[in-house]
Image (cartoon, rainbow, N blue to C red):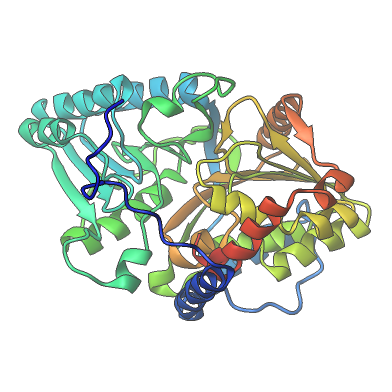
Length: 436
């Protein structure tokens, strides 16, 4: 190994990192993060909740009043589990389109399945179908340019929701996290999935994600469409309408009652937060909760603890692996209080958990894009489907129980004895937990 000549050494000693300097760095980081967090909106404080049960008729009517959208009859709802079911359903719906396709996507990456979706959408454009594709300005930054070009060459209308062209911290912090596909105004697919190879598979593979979407036919699709056209109007100043987007209803597609819940900080709507909080408070037998971003505020934590105290089985499935370690640190810091209060917490081990579902008393369930954190509740555009149907709820409950077979239950003793490094990470993330 050659040595550098004396006097010309390329080696420069690293500056000595003293304890004082480290503490100063942490303090500056905390101050900056705290300043940003101080201007971050929060859901409104709720001190008293109504005494309801999800299988009471008053529950649905109460949610209609607070959420501003109706519970519609006559729908068909099919669960789509993981990429093995989600992507074939999306491609089939797109290829069957005759008049219009509206597609909002938060995340679009590289890979075969994303290329197939771009190709299918472009083909429908060339066939004369009006196709509108709305891409979030942050989530789709990694979208291959050739996919965008394929869409535009085919004649599709591609728009970006809040692009990063001009600096506006508040504007850029509010993202469109919704995933909406509506075909001919009659078939809709929504949930938590993105367009990427990591969503492919059966939800049990290393490097792939476990997710849940729903496919809907019936009157509720009009409310999925409403969620899309609202965001499209902001992005393009174009108001979509007419029979190709909102056709007159046909005969009922099924017997499932559905409520589409759109949540938007732009309109000071905290509908997703209200829905989840009311559902938790109305549980009488069981709460089965699956979510990758489990960073509850104090009011929602109290709701889960109150449910456990009145004898409800409260079980939460969270990730054993996660794409953001900061989120994991913020989540696990609060496990102790929940575990002591009787809440069962499990960590999914087979793959990265990304599904966002909630089942209450085997009678009511929701699937959507909403994470259980302040970003989803108070910063992002989100959309969930609430289902008032024992059959659909039972299927989701069964999926939950099967997922638990590939999860590890969190033990309070193990949590208490977590290492110093873990505790430091949890402290560092405190100032920004509401921004994650």
